[in-house]
Length: 423
Ligand SMILES: [Zn+2]
Image 1 (tube, rainbow, N blue to C red):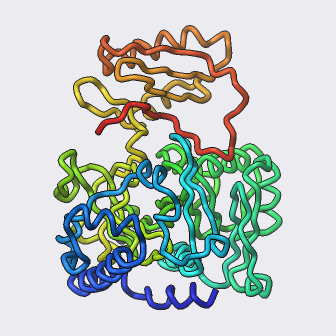
Image 2 (image 1 turned 180 degrees about the vertical axis):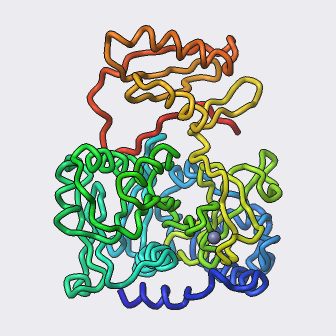
């Protein structure tokens, strides 16, 4: 925990540093992580050599582009021993897995340093958003985290609640614990907001509601604000990289924790795109050493804004974050229908309880519909007509009733996903 606090302390004030100072720090950290990866991690050594690079050739942010990007698939197909620092004892590491909703999960090893970095990344975001050490936090997750001695003594006390508990049980915990802060996935917050509104109870006065696990739909944002009187803040990250981007109180995009993570937005030609042009989000973790992450393809899609934010922070912002690159339907013309299109379209159909759009092939899209049986066919007819105005006839749209059990709450709900690779 001391290591966490040390990192947290070092990060203080950096979100408002002048751009030149921030860049100097980033380049210094970049040189350190590349030198480490080259000297001690076989996978990165090989990749740098294949690109005819030595660490001394990577000195500036512009040099970073000479490194190849790294995909999750590539890491998964590489023996774990080659991905981690030589001499690391895996038994002494924390192992976390990516959700694997698009295939096999990837195992990430975190040594003590990375565990501290991961915690510091989360706490730094909370502190930037006004979190006080006396605040009580209710965190709703599939797996409970640790409770530290300091928390039992009243420093940042936290109660863990299971995502598998019913919304009514979660509501009881909320009323009983009276937190100032809630952290949970968007879908959990939505269900809890419905429970609050249906029960007609006044929720405890909250200051912060953080969602950090799924796309935050505009309707969820509005519903949570109505139930709790606080507009939730969106936080973005990946298990592989910790949380590294967060909305400030202006809610004008997500500031990148640029002193710990480097974010690039790349186009189809792998070249960086101009500000506010959406493309693939590629991220380098500047602090991780046990299993370095250099130019990691997040699989997500968004743009970067570098103009000043009204809040005064100088960290760049990810804007138009539309979630995963795969949360999309690709049309044969090359156009992308991102999930907000489907969400906004489907939201107008009250009789539609839940949906999922799965693109199986470039010319075949499956739409699963949860609705009362007597309304199903009429709904399908109307949806088919509406989607037909955007999706060309060459793409077959197949509807099917969603009869299965309710979606597993421990899995991310992805309303839209494609199985077609775009590059
Ligand atoms: Zn801001």
